[in-house]
Length: 70
Image (cartoon, rainbow, N blue to C red; front, side):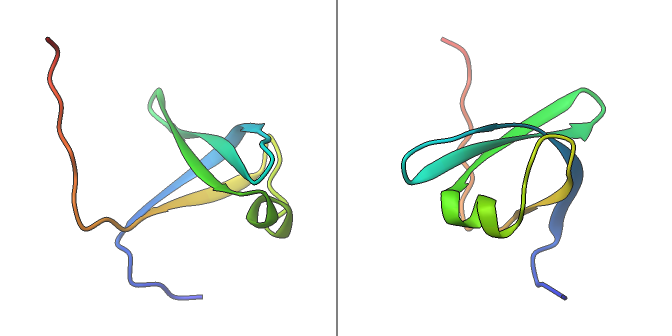
């Protein structure tokens, strides 16, 4: 499969926090960096995601918010 998103981060699933409709997938993308994504439980099941599985975080955003400490 080819996709247009250029921000593709390869990683390993560390944890999945199940919810009623959505779950949070926590991934280690290397270099001490960990990211999380909220996706549907249906997608988690269809992709057969589980801790230890290799996966890609694919980021496609039209805006980015930046924050600074108080």
